Image 1: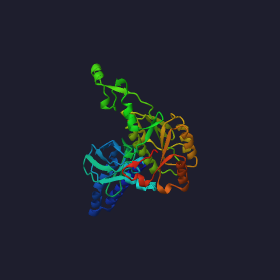
Image 2: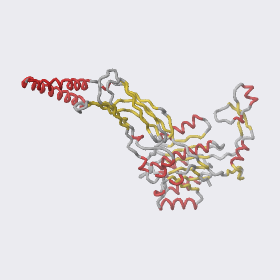
Image 3: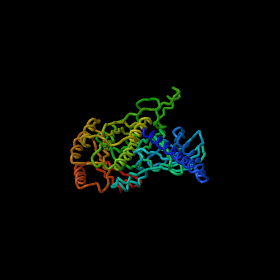
Image 4: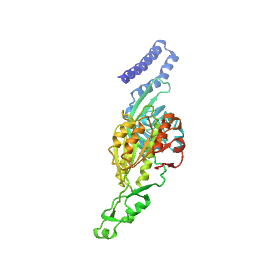
Length: 422
């Protein structure tokens, strides 16, 4: 309704101005009066044509160089406009309407040097370009989106403005062009110092345990992606005319569970949470290469558990889940963590990745520690956010035998992140 009123007002203004000049020429007469009238006539006709010109019928499309990327990558975008009528236009202003999810930056480990200043990750991302199309039917506008943050981003609309050189007539239309851009979280190089696992009350290096487990064949099965080449049973493969691999007896393997604290709390450090997601994915990649059983548990507004297998489809689900994950929930983090961790299998090694510790955190660790074989905590937070109370909690947990890894901007800015288990 507002657009119709504006159109009628602009049209009435042009007609009234035309009638005033015509009346002036008729009553005044003379060369000057008619010269002014006929001099204004082309401008009037152009304004009238621009008012009636339907820019909403333009065909506007967006092309992305890549639709699936890693956080921090750049994407080249090309906007194409096709119009059937080559009406002369003096200028056009094109604006990409970015969603809120793109009003921040993601990128290299260097950005974690500002871990204690998370507000620096927020930006006012705008793309505006002005061109002078003239009579052109096809217009192409390229631009680049730098440092795309983690998540699924929906580019939905493009705003186009045009008008005459005097500013008397302006037109604007928002074109709906839906495109999706997915930025998976980055994987960081992580080093876990070699630890030991117990097999029948004896400390045996995990590598030796892996070798022992793969020496005893318990059966055969069809080949699945991720199986080692050396596991193939060539005799059975030739007999069945399909790839067959050996199944090995697993002698009391140690289960590992990686738990990500995705609960929201007041004054949350969003940049620290981004680092927690990246480190969780990196730890999953390291555990995936080992022979021990493992699982991934995310605790937030809703809990989600994924068994860690060599199935590429399962790994893709974990990547997509971490891509869409945002902190949430209205229950305190320790309470929510305790509820979900108590449902995990007992006698497992648990790695808890969190960005928050409060007074109830140690008690939650004690309760879960009674069921778990080993607990390691990874706290990710800016150094200036580590208050005296938090440092006391860390010291208390370490005195009780809990391994606590504190990852600040100093550790996260390194090329390789080290996580201690003992």
